Image 1 (tube, helix red, strand yellow):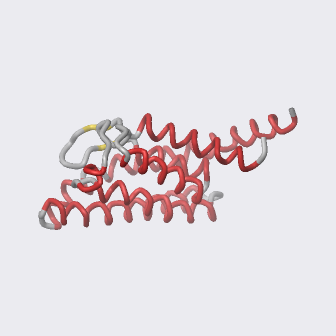
Image 2 (cartoon, rainbow, N blue to C red):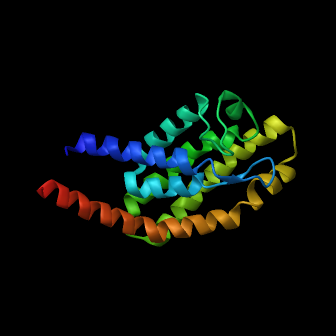
Length: 182
């Protein structure tokens, strides 16, 4: 399989995985806990920053077109205009920041973990600013409802990604080599 087709297949596959698993969420308040961040952390390793960004962008467009792939199996432009819209856009910032670091320092789990933390901080920042604007709440209220509650789970997701994603990548490389010889 040539490289362009291989890339398109991987991007499509990760986008499909995002559409299936990212909507699964726990409604703990105005911002639900979802699997989206975990999927996107993995996508950075598997696809690299640029292709993960493209995959996430496609996922967002699919959701904005109305298909129920966003948190809580929802979709549509109203989701972007609502209190969680900033987090949807924030995924792109998270992937860009974490992806650049992971692409350049994939040999160091510690640096990759810090890259994911920086990317997640950008996600929190963009999402929380939007939440404050839409919901007309104080910074303190927004931080409690939109950040503090999510930190432990996101740290677990990052640790899982740093540990498991490199193993998946090595398996994919082995499979790609076997297929290229066939």
